[in-house]
Amino acid sequence: MFDTVCRFLAETFSTDFASWLLGEPITLTELSPSELSLEPIRADALMLLQSDEIVLHVEFQTQPDPNMPFRMLDYRVRVYRRFPHKRMRQVVIYLQESGSEQVQQTVFSIPGTQHEFEVIRLWEQPLEVFLSTPGLLPFAVLSQTTDRAATLRRVATQIEEITEQRLQSNVAASAAILAGLVLEKGMIQQILRREIMQESVIYQEIKAEGIQEGLQQGKEEGLQQGKEEGLQQGKEEGERSLILRQLSRRLGQMPTGVQGQIVQLSLAQLEDLGEALLDFKQMADLETWLENS
Image (cartoon, rainbow, N blue to C red; front, side):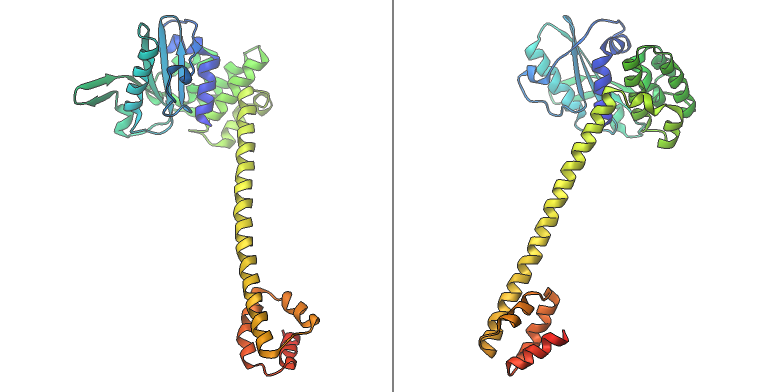
């Protein structure tokens, strides 16, 4: 969910990201990983943006990833293969505060090969950086601030000043989702108006993803339940078939009514009957047992 929001923001507000990460508000367009000939290692948190002169590679992370340095090298090589004359800026943006050494790592190194990239730990970034443009507002609550609730209120105030309704709803929904990393749901709902967020593209997309995941989970649970019920039914059928054969050999052909009663027995009752039939001498014994059961 957080990856989806970050990718949406980088794609929708690419000029804001260019101003922040490249130092100039240049126009960037999305570069699909498929254009790099090879399938991406992991595309969910990846954003590739390009202009005529530069490729901006951004990775959003909520948790440290030990494979990140290699992924940076891998994509640098892929981009060079496709665009050998373009500059490339690679940035890993960590969203959630962590004391892990991995969030400090900016180099991939093996004998004979060394590759450097940049890391931004949002919780160390000045708050004011994210209050200057709409596309960066949702990240403000994750920045260097001593009062995240107060920061979210500042963000909400600026969102209220956005006059274009679709833009306003998209920024509000993104801010609410990212704030979930550091604030309680109730607090977020008190500060950001839900009716604005519900109109946003990203809200609808995540809602659709949730519905799809729910349907898939329900399908899997239904399949598992079906398997369990099938196993139970198969066990009962096997036990019933065995009991009927044993009774026929011991007592002879059974009346249809008696067979019907046996068919209705539960697995536990069938198991009890399997023990009791060893003492049966005549059909009346079976009939008596069925009446008592």
